[in-house]
Length: 218
Image (cartoon, rainbow, N blue to C red; front, side, top):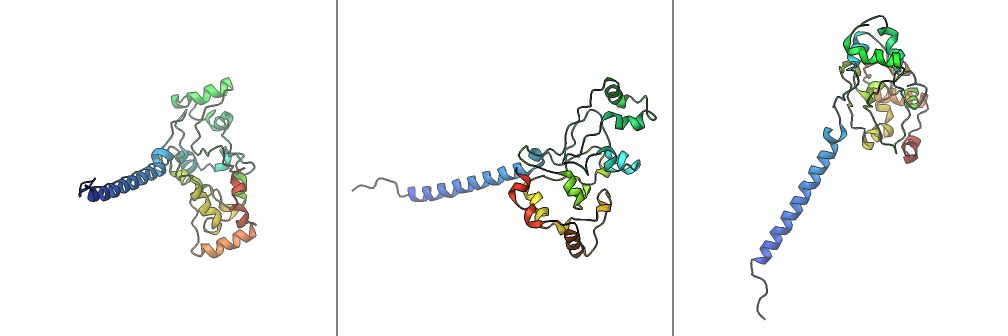
């Protein structure tokens, strides 16, 4: 019987298989990198807001605590977007004619809230409770980064599930005294693991429960 395929077909087929595998591997790697990049997560991207509110100025320079503006952060699941009258507590007395603050004055006069753009916006299928994290000793800076150094707020972490799970599986690495939750310059002690385990027990952090899927996906 005459040979159907040319002798070189074996080599070509083997090379083709290697090339296809290589292309698929590179494509998978590229897709993963794009998915985890700031292009997709918007990590470290400053969002355009109605006014260029500077957390660096208000937190670091003025000395406002997180809870002053985000009044419900330790009481409810939602941190709370500051109403305009909170801004006007100060800005009815200072910078009263600043063009940059005109949207704030307009909002106050018309009773129409400013349309702030959420920076840390989790998917709808994820339940996150601010108050429980604060009551268990997780600092604002742990998740939001050094907002006291951010002229324009940005998302510092990916907010991926793996990032959340890392803390949920080993909360002793991140937990701090409740009195230090709002402290942006808090320094973990050298014996953080032992100290953290003590706080985990004291604050009744149930590690097995917080790693359950239904804790966040309800």
